[in-house]
Length: 459
Image 1 (cartoon, rainbow, N blue to C red):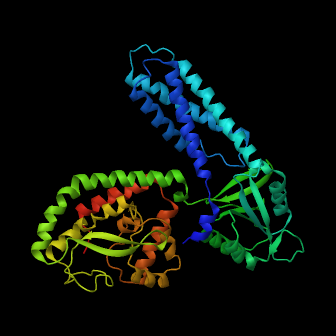
Image 2: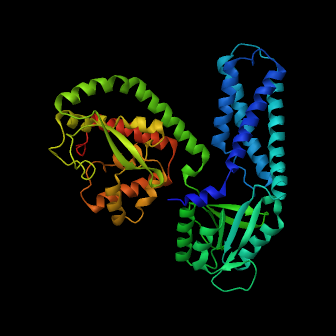
Image 3: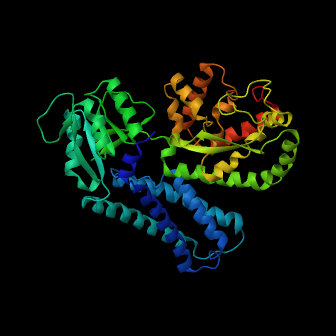
């Protein structure tokens, strides 16, 4: 999906700033506990509790979501929210685990944490501004459309160096004989392919809806953040959020997909690894030798069926399954159908109960798949489906899954009509755009329940 050369040139390391901030704050909290040296605090349980509580609460409250255009007032609001939640969790520990004990220095430790974290927060904020004003950690920007609104944002880019924007120029329907004029709207794609562009600002006043749609599609493909310079009279959709530059200029952020946020990516990956390890240790460890005997008794061939599938960004990987068919030449070309003569007796049971999919937990550990996501297809079928569904390739921007929203919604097994694949892709895209951790949990639970209830399409 993404232009790999373009992405590699951008070298976006800003996500590491948040990681360093989290590490710094956790270090501060643990150092304060150590320096005050109260024996009630100097135990692994309290330190682990307060560290995990801080990381989880700060992630949920967006404590580290400070952008280059964020105002100082926003920092105060974040600090108040985070400290309020921290105080609740802090005293809850002693109410639950130390009830009846007299604990010294409670308020001294909590106050010291508040002051130190607040100092660290503002220090990071102003040091980053200074660092950016010296020409570092910048975002390259282009503007599409040249009117009063876009001229205002260009003025901000030029005058506010501490925001860290490097303005490259503008595109317009009209021709301008200016140094900053980069070309007409048709030349945007060519320019982006030859230059590193991080953010694109589009004037809603100067462009039609169709032009905005084309630019949005280009931004998705090239992994460029799209910002909209609005009409004040416009009504905005839920996939846009408002930001203010220099307190006066309003910009619409086209919201990122959930998986573009680093914390969501790692949350899903950690859950995948933990869940898959549990399955491998407690289920596959004894299931593999049992099935090896049963499968071998009924038909010749290996226990594990290996098949090339399409993964994230269209990359190829080897997908593992317990073999449920007799060895045949059509396995990579034709879906299993009802009463398929290729399916063995033990294979029919494996497919009915979805046990044949269990080796894919190894694919999850290897990083090729996720537990929940769009189902991976073989290349030959994928090429066919691309002709049927316009947005088919969007499902490749995330790792494929063992189960997915489409599967629990009744779209699993054989694809008989074009409507079947269109509905699957529609649900896959909905999942990608609306992912949440508890949505994964819900899909997993419903998948397990469907195994016990039985699915007429599981053949």
